[in-house]
Length: 160
Image (cartoon, rainbow, N blue to C red; front, side):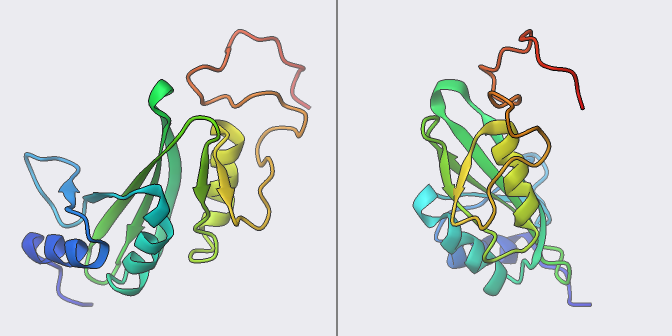
């Protein structure tokens, strides 16, 4: 196993590879295993590619979204280098309507179902996704249940 990265080295590598200043998930206890980089949507794919090829973050942990109501959505992706212990959370902000983000599926096969789940529950469309359709809910389901504007008291047909 490769030597774990020190915090300063991890921050410098992320800064150089992505062109943004990373922060820690917990400002009181910075840790190279939990760095966060916020990138513009137009650099989302390039940032993920740099994380994979330059930083060695080949493990795709998860992808989801956070609904900020009028401010749109944060699309959040966690990537890790299992050899050095570097953990990187990438974030980008997309508008609410239309909620569109480039797909990471061409870079990480693990993004395939996670992007479909994010589309199914938040309504974020991933451009370039090879099979973007509902994953958990029926095709005739109306709305996106994890959006903050979703009416939870709406009557729905029973589960099949």
